[in-house]
Amino acid sequence: MREAILLKLGGSLITEKDRPDTARVEVIARLAGEIADAWPTMDRGLVLGHGSGSFGHEAARRYQIVEEGISTPDRAVGASRTQAKAMRLHGIVTEALREAGVPVFSLSPGSAAVSSSARPVSFHVEPVALALSWGLLPVTYGDVVLDRERGAAILSTEVVLRELAGALPAHGWRVDRVIWLGETDGIYDARGETIPSVSAANAASVRTLVGGSASTDVTGGMAHRLDAALWLSGQGIVSWIGDGREPGVLARALRGQATGGTRVAPAAG
Image (cartoon, rainbow, N blue to C red; front, top):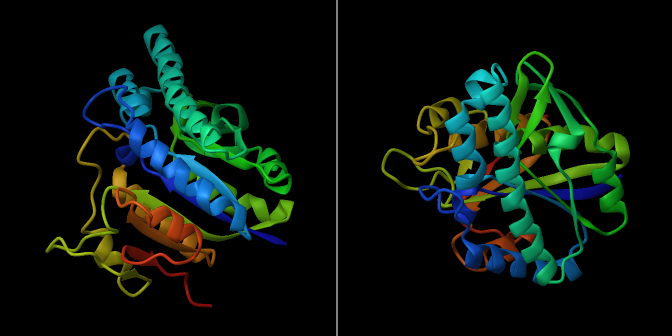
């Protein structure tokens, strides 16, 4: 059993979330460079997932994909346009990684997953495992997927990473830890100070402190991220939520030297 790290780059970090279809190209380039710097010395595989930010989220909100799926011809057009916008940002991210010298391999959830009533019921994970085995960096993202009841649904990056964490061990890869990077130094308490650690003992109280995103986010923002991290903790996987705006944070986290932020501890036993 080999080990892998899952990494999420939040949409609020890599796009201007209040300006539709606007990528933060300098931030993306810096993060790609930090991955490239750490890549030659990493002793674990890495899977990168990124949010859709002002690309996919804005389109999904406009066409009400979360609420309605494909209920009318207009909704079908909207699902197609939402997918195209998410893919456009994905191209910007993967191209930055290639320019930095990282051997990326793009993986679209829309071609790998099927949902039922907006919940994933199948996910073809073997391509991710094969990419890891051949020394590639699998890169995925939040996407529109086909849904058995609704026609289409949004599969968030958090759900994609959770599905991968559950399915990869059957293909020889165990997830060692998950790194979540956004625009905050972890999860904040009522005073705006970072909560250093979340565990079963304080999870309920912390959950009441977090809400959605300050900008357009159809998947739930920090609350969704925390829920995913807590689910992962139940599988024995530690998460670290940190501030991707700070140069060097990602490189240190990939080397296991993360400081600050919020650690979501694995469940005991």
